[in-house]
Image (cartoon, rainbow over all chains, first blue to last red; front, side):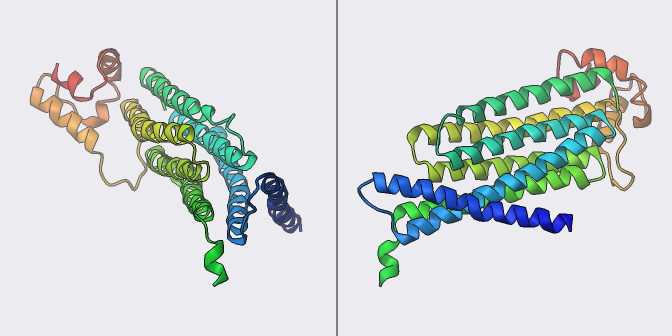
Length: 133
Length: 158
């Protein structure tokens, strides 16, 4: 019952959010002198469906990695899951960049990538010093 | 035919962006499933590094397709190059630190070649022959020499 209602909510969100995107797209198309063809509208709609589906999928993957951070029996598992979480934050930033049609967040991609690598290297040094499981 | 009139470059590029985004999302999700489901820390490192690299590449290529600006393309290519260099190095550092700290493998893992290499190198140097099961007992010594050189051959040779 609860699962069915959650799935219904998710599908309603998937159905309504691209319509909102199409509305903003319609505003942009009316601002441009040349209207969009049907194929372009179909491509935009497909891209927005994929982006909304991707936000849900990355959120599920994020929750799984957070579970691994809490559960993980060793220090290596926690560090690895934290690194994967950093990469999923990058994925969310990319999806928001595509969905919100802005380039404000896009600088964060390279910065989070560098920060994730430095964090992983420091964490590996910490594990190697502390010799521990 | 009306269908061919509507087909423009922008629509095709958006469809390509959707396809690249789907590929990237698939790899990201498979990496997360591997992090949760695989039995060992080494296996989880294997899953996370490869899948996350490919997934991030696909999603950045989708951004390149959708927003065609020179700024975005250059930043995305720089990020892809950095990810292809940095993620294997990071997971290699993590795996080597885990093996150095004596993390036990999964019970069905077939071989441990790094431990065999360490044992062979120490027996070839013949100053301190030891089997790899005792290598955790000497990890304090290796931890001192590990601080200045990160390569694995160096402490055994000196």
